[in-house]
Length: 487
Image (tube, rainbow, N blue to C red; front, top):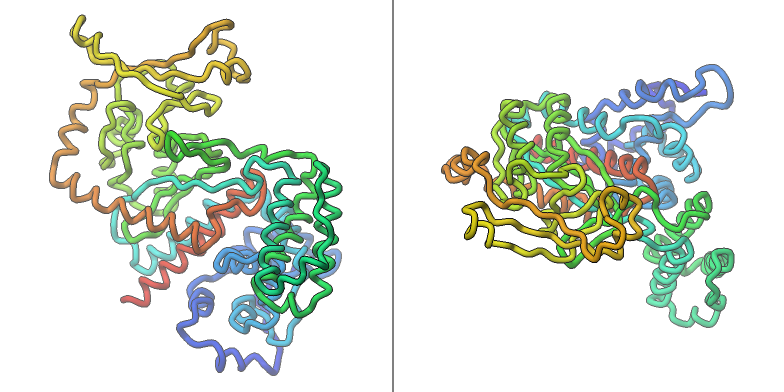
C-alpha cells in the first residue's frame, strides 16, 4: 500500500536541517526547484492503494536513484551515505533519526515500478518546462550529437565480468594492505561460472571479516560493486553478453560494444530530447525524432546544429518541410542523390565507412575516377566488406551471393540536389552558428565522467534508457540551478 508522501514529518529534530545544510547546497537547491510530486502521480497506478504493508514513498525511491546518478554510487553506497549525510536525508524528505531502506528495494523499484514508463521523455520534458518557466531557454536552436556507452558486459561472459570486478577489488585492497594476499582464497583457474561465483563469495567473506579494510572508502566501494554485480548477474546467468548491445565504431580502427544516446541540446546547454539505440546505429537517422521530441517538450526549434553525420538528403528535406535551418556541413559520401539500398547500408561518419544492416563495417574503400573521365559522370566510391562475415550473417539471403569472393557497395559522390545547402554553408550566418556545436561535446563529457555514463549500469535497452533518463535529469537540473544563480 502506498501513501501520499507530502505529509507532515513529525520529528523534534527537523530544525537541524536549517543549521547544517547551507542555502547554496546543490541538493537543497534541487529540492526547492522541483516539485517531485509528479513522480507520485505517474507511479500511483503501479501500487495497491488499500492493501498490504505501507510501501516506501515512490518519490523517495526515485530520489534515491537520482542521488545514485548525481554522485555515481552503487545501490549499497547511496543507501549507506544516506545514513549519515544530512543533505541526503533532507533531500529524501527523511527525519534525521529515520531509518534508511534496504538496498535491494532499489532493484525492485526499477524493475517493478519504472519498467514500463517512458521515463526518458518524461524527465527531459519536466526539466525543459522548468527551464522555460524560469526564462532560461531563450534560443530557438538545438545542437545534436551522439555519445556512446559501453555495455556492462562488454562482450564478456558472466565469468569474465566477475573476474574483472574481483581483480579491481583485490587491487584496491593491496594498496591498503598487501599482506592480505596470504589470506585470500586461491583464484579460480577453471572455465566455470559456478567456480567463479564460489571464489567471489569467498573473497567477499574474507574482506568483510576485516573491519579495518572496510573502513576505507575505496575498498568498500569496490566490495559493494562486486556484490551488486554478483546479485544482478545471477538473474542473467545463462546470458553470455548483453543481448541488446551491438558493436559500434568510433573510428575505422576502434570499436565499442554497447549503446548510443542521441542528444539534442539548446544553446543554453539544456538537453531537450534524447533517444537510446544499440551501438551500431548511425547518428543522422535520429534527427527527425530529436526535433519532434524537443518540440513536444516545449522547445521552439527554428535551427538544428550538427556535424556532417546529419547532412544526408532526407534530413535536408526534413528541415525544409519542418521549417527549420539545418546547420550541418555537407559530406560528399553521404549526401549523394538517389542512393540504392538506403535501409541496408548506412554511412558511419566516425569510421568514414559504410556499414551493412548487420552492423558490419566495410574493411576498405576505393575511389574510381574512370567513370568521370570516360562518360562524364560523377566518380564512384566502392566499399568492400569481409565476405567471411557475410557467409555467417543472418541477413545474407538476398544480400550475399553464395560462393562470391567479394561483397561491395558503391555510391556516387556528388549530387546537384544539394546545391542550395552547399551555398548556405558558405554564408557568414552558417559559419557563425556552427561555432556553437562545441557545447554538446562538453555535455557528453559531463555525462560520462561525472555521472557514470561511460559504462552501462545494467543490461538491456530498457535499463540503458532508465540510466540515461536519470543522468540527463541530473545534468539538466544542475545546469538550471547554475544559470539561476548566475542571474
